[in-house]
Image (cartoon, rainbow over all chains, first blue to last red; front, side, top):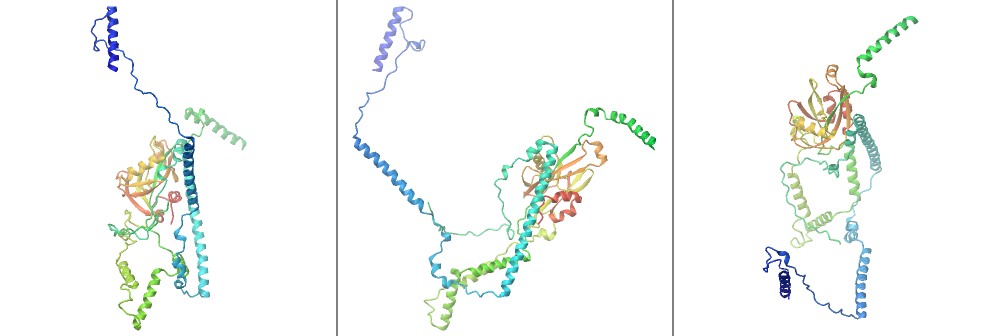
Length: 203
Length: 274
């Protein structure tokens, strides 16, 4: 079909050209490609007839969808009320049963011992209070020192001051490894430990 | 009397115009021009303690008290229950009421405990006092592990060398933080790694140059801004032209080493004293 139409087109062109005696009879795409003109072909077929569905079935389908979603919501609500147990704060039954056997028979403290303990606690609180005051003083001193430095810098140059008060993002978050009881042993190969992970997975 | 003072006033007055002339264009500017100061950055490089401090007498007493209270309030553990059970079994066995083949566990809790104790006694903890502590090697970082150490250098200032925190002049176009980083790298070598704690200076100190220097340079003196940094790794390599010597000192030893009391006072403001 496509070829036939093309052929018609070509012959029509040649005929018209011949009538006008302007161009030669030969047709080639090499020297005058503009002579080729053809309409785009249509690839399509007639539309299908729409299928009719019973409105009752449609309704039933919608209902089923609704029910499914409702069921899911109900299930989620039920789970929401169920809290994840914290095993660490639940006393195991075995300990409650064996409480009497696991009791220590500690002799009660004498008057002197209790007095001594009370005095020690008092002394400790005084010691910690003093320590706390010293810490506060130290912090105050450092802040004062920094403020003085910043004020002096501002007096010298406003730009340098503005640069100095910028936050350094590389310091946040800061990670510090705390002091240890004894130094690390050099070239120490720690023995490989094995463990089984018994912690439960909660979703 | 009156005439005399009037005469001296006249004499002063007649001097005034010549003084103004010698200042050049001073009449258009404020008479008291702002002094020019050199801006210097100094680095307070700290090695943080890696060990806890020794407990004081009171601290260890209180620690023992807490442990005692904890023990009194606790219940027996599985291990203790087992140990007790086995002890009772052993007593029964002695009396001959129990058959040794069937009812006795082979490896008792006491055996296990002995094995653990044996293993523990074989383990050697590293000493809190290192070799450098014993040698009093002030250049080593492997020293006084439970204290802060601060880097102090013997730097050339003017004509003579002084013990100070490493410092240097700010160059044009630099922020103070950049100057501090450059100063540390130039004076102590590139192997020394440090983390600077923020862009802001933590302390301030200023001093005037001696008269002989003041006439040659524009500046009246120097304003030193201290920057705090933490030591990460590596040790100092002295660049001989700038620094003659260096020491890592505890904060309590600084006072005797630093150049003078005023300098020490401004440094001690931002140091952590233990």
